[in-house]
Image: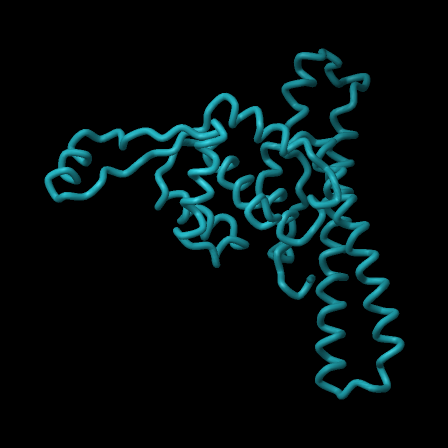
Length: 230
């Protein structure tokens, strides 16, 4: 399985964890909610769905409205198939959410992972964010070294393009620093103190809260899937 198809499978499982959908709804959500999938087509999505069904992670069901199925039958069209996440599919998705290996730090995979941070445990979010920051800091160091070696041989426009790429990476590193500090602050605020409940049940309820995403006064965050960071 290619890395790109693996990212698509991850996103499909994540969206279907929220609610069952048919193919058109899924494609629309992939395009609008997860911008990294704007280039994906039905020709890519449906083989992915068939694979997930064959693996037992999705189940196919007829559309829920009987009149829609009847109208489709009379018109000679197939009724829409609704895809539902199975118990095995939910378990598999949770395993994927807990994964924090190097591939989760790469550009497209990180963007997909970040889109589902609301369903991800705080400690996993921290490992993914710190891994992504480390990866970008390595990239930034290489870009600076390359620019220092070739600066004299570059024309003004190529030089500006190189600087633009570096600024994009620097901007994402600053954004990641804010997210990491916010996650840490949220975790520290929930540690038992003199006036804080130490009840483990209550703490477990809070463990998956999205907590401390930074609030910017009208500012915008860089898109993790921005091509300029590649």
